[in-house]
Length: 404
Image (cartoon, rainbow, N blue to C red; front, side, top):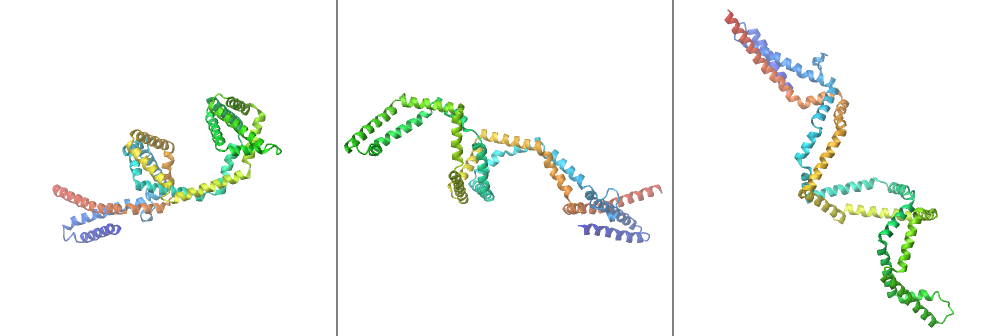
């Protein structure tokens, strides 16, 4: 395109030279000379204008030339302000999101099984990469640190006391008591011989065997009768005694320093046990291995569940108008909040990026992007200049003829 525009200028110069030399012999060539002269002027003027955008024409540092390389920072700042005011305004973004219907578009995309499978695969790959990146020792260290801060470092007794008091006051412990008593009764009915052996072992060895059997049978029947009585009577003295004990325990956990020290001792002994730490480490490794295997298998129940959940969410967004409206409102509010808080920072990326560019390289990149249009300006200038020169010369000749 540069060759074409420059070629037209050369053609105009040749035509001008020929017509200028022969116009005395052939008067009609004066019009050709005027047209070619105007074409040269237009071509040179537009060449200067186009070149002044990107460089100093002919290397002459004429004021207001090489505009882009010398003023790229101001151009970048202006571009950033333009984007901030016209594209990152809250009203524009809200209108755009409202017209798009985010919940409808996202819901339709998620509801397609192929998309749900693809998204599940991406999530699985991301989780797998994250777990591969993290060190097991670091994770165990974090877990141990959190446990020491929030578990070991806290006094359990008051919270346990309040919880125990609420459970006793609401009577929720009665179900646990009933379960224990039912299991005890079932075991006694199913295992009379085992119970008898336990009793016999505690009798003197010098007693005759028939005395052992009598005692075993009597103790067994009394134990079974006692358990069945507790089972049948909601107001049995054992139940009432257990309620009193739990109420007393709840109070001591909250207010008795000795009881609180005992609880803290049990807690520290439990948490400092190396076997507990080893169990925690083994549990984490087992969970990690199982999770990695499930994420790697496209047919695993975990991935199938995630896929179905994604599809269900998509279908829900497409059919539940209330939910869709809430999601759209949340997205709009979130976008508005981000823009109001960070719109200037986002727009600043443009100006900072432009500032980091080399001036000459920036000029070359822009010229390559719009180069054809710029050369068409030169071509149009040549054509328009020729027509303007011809018109001016024709009008001037007409005026001279009328005056003569």
